[in-house]
Image 1: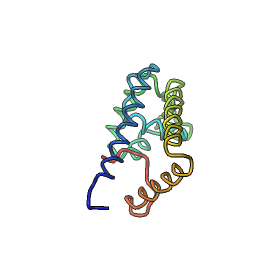
Image 2 (image 1 turned 180 degrees about the vertical axis):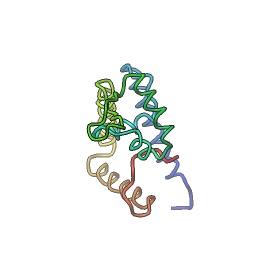
Image 3 (image 1 turned 90 degrees about the horizontal axis):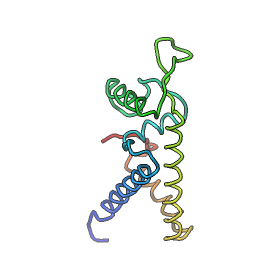
Image 4 (image 1 turned 120 degrees about the vertical axis):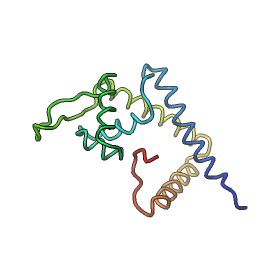
Length: 152
């Protein structure tokens, strides 16, 4: 293979198209006010509630930036806040029913994209591609498991 960066560019463009199509689909389903950055918060909260500090750490942003995003998501109805059961000084941020609905729609969309990839490539080649992608992620992350958070 001659020296080129086409493989990297097609991977980057595929990621961008997946995100763009996801947000078009979300908008069509009534989630027109959600941004890509919100997905990283939703992903963290899907494992259980978190404090603002934990969200800031997950996003690799300041506590103030996380607080602004939590305020925005609360105002839009995607998350709720309640007193933390173990720390009276903290608030626990949790997904609301609207937030869970957005996650379910995202999962539906991702399943459909994966189905289309399997249909295009066949199950064996799609499985091989998935393994290759995992190896690439590990290589790019210096052998450590890749994290799912915005680092750009």
